[in-house]
Structure formats: C-alpha cells, structure tokens
Length: 407
Image (tube, rainbow, N blue to C red):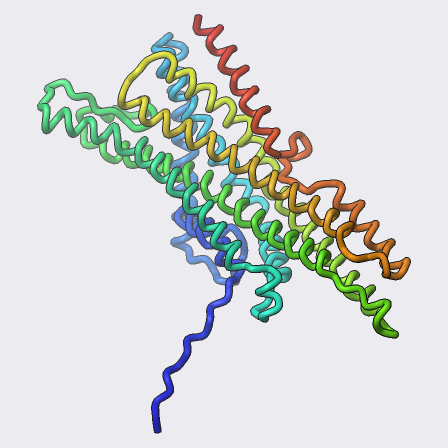
C-alpha cells in the first residue's frame, strides 16, 4: 500500500499571535499581563519583586543625584541628562503598575478579543483577513521593539565600552569609571570591585524601565490593530449586504436578524476600546506629558554642547520618544478613520428596498459611528494625528522656558 504524504494542517491566526511579543517583554520582567490559566512559580514572582525593588531604588537614587547636583550648582547639562532619565523611568513605572493594577480588566479585554476573533472557517478568514493584519502588526511591533532595544544597549554599554577603550587600548592612567545613568550611589564604587555590581544594578533598572515602556505600547498596538480589523470587516459586510426583503417571503426577518447581529458586533467592538482605554488611559496621559518634557530636555542638551558619547545616545533617545508618540497618535487616527468608515458603509449599502425597521437600525448605526472611537489619555486628551502637533508645541514651550532659565 502506497504511503500517502500527510498534508500539514494550516495554522490559523489567534489572538495570542498578536500579543506574543508584548507578553514576551512582560515575561522578561516577571509579569504576566493577564490571566492565562497557568500558575506562576514562586521564582517568577520573586524575580518580578526584585526587578521592581531595584528599579524603585534606582529611581530614588536618580532623584537624589539630581537634587544633589542642583544644590551643588553642578553642570546644568548633566542635570538635564539625569532629569531625562528620571522622566523615562516614570513612564516605564507607570505602565508597569498600570498593568499590575488593571490585570483583571486586561484579562477581560483579552477574553473579549478571543470571543470576537474570527473562527478558522473559510468565510471568516476571507472577511477578516487576520493573516494580513498580523503581518502588519509584526511590522510595527518588531520595528518598535528593535528601536527601543538598540536605545537601551546604547545607553547601557557605551560608558563601559569607553572605559575599557581608555583603560586597555589607550592606557589612560586617569580613565574614569562612569555609571550608565547617574553617578551618585550610597556607596563608593570607583576603583573598587563594587563598580561592576553597581553597573549591573543600574543597567538592570534601565532594562526594566525600557521593557515596561515597550511592552505597554506593544500591547496597545496589538489591541488597536485587532479593533481596526473588526471595524474594517463590519464596514465590508455592510457595503456588501444583500437585501432579501424583495426576493423572499421571509426576507424581511432574515435581513433584520442579520443586521441585528452586525449591531451586536458593533457594540462588542466599542466595548473593546472602552476597556483598553480604562487600562492604558492614565499611562497614556503620563506618557504624553513626560515625553514632551523628555523631548524638550534632550533637544536642549543637543543645543548646549557636542559630545560624541552623549550625542549618539541622546539622538537615539529623542528619535525613540518621537517615534513612540507618533505611532500612538497614528494608531489612534487609524482607529478614528475605521470607526467613521462604518457610518459611511451603512450609507453606501443598497438599503432602498429594505423594511422601515431595517432603515431605523441603519440610522442608529450611522449616528453611533458619527462619534469616532480613539485612544484616550483619560478624559483629558483624545489622541489623533492633530495631537502630534499639540505634543510638539508643548515640547517647544518647555524648551523655550528651559532656555530662558539657562540664559
């Protein structure tokens, strides 16, 4: 009997495929962003606690170093650099603690995403096209993750690299041991074996802040793209809706039943964005404010003095922050456009021969779509591409105030 080659089953896209990269970054910190049904080990929890303790300790040490530098009237440029690191840590901490506090809501959000996600049937796969959306998600999330990873390693390794070059290759007798983020610790680390553990603890704190910031944004990107996918599918189905009222005796009831299911899908999509904004609203607001301050500080540093070591790191930091804010505003704008497109689709469909009840439901859909859905930094700010101009204007005002103080 001839052996028949087994055809491998086609792997269908799942919600976890969109969230995989964000979850990996969270796991490197010892965090499960939502309940997966798997029990955490005690070592996993201890690892998370140690990470948080180290990061909080580094945060207060940075603040103490900044206060000390201001009291001693030291180099204003160094003060700005330390303040920019403090701002970055604030963003990372806010996103980490937001996820920990809102874990039940995050779990509910993921479960709702799984409930709404297209089934493996050929019809759903054609309507939703999840593979193309996953490909787009990977393009954004991997690119963003790589940029921030390069940013971290540049800040963590350049000072150590410079020290070894000066000490071993150039053989400078007065080569200075410099920490990656701040130079004041409760113990003396220079010319001592404590230099390397101290360097590691600061680098680990920087890694925790970076991963906390990356993971939160990647989670937002993945959720928003799925919501947009649902909106696009809803608009497509509305435009292609075939009215059966004139063709079949029971066509009116069929039309109403099908349209009611679409209304239910619309309501489910709206709930997704509401939960997402509840989870990430406060971190988004802090992110927006602190990032404006961060852009101002880094831009100010670049106008004061040119130092190759600082210049490369600060340009990377400036690029990363601007890119992050732009992506958040851009994703929110895509969400606005997709939600408004549902109203346009309801108007474009062939509704002339439909029942009066059908038309009333269509009016309801259109009216709801006129209120666009977007990412909300609490009730204070709705994100869109126009928000980017507000962000840049705020950063410039901070910059002008700082230049005036310096002069």
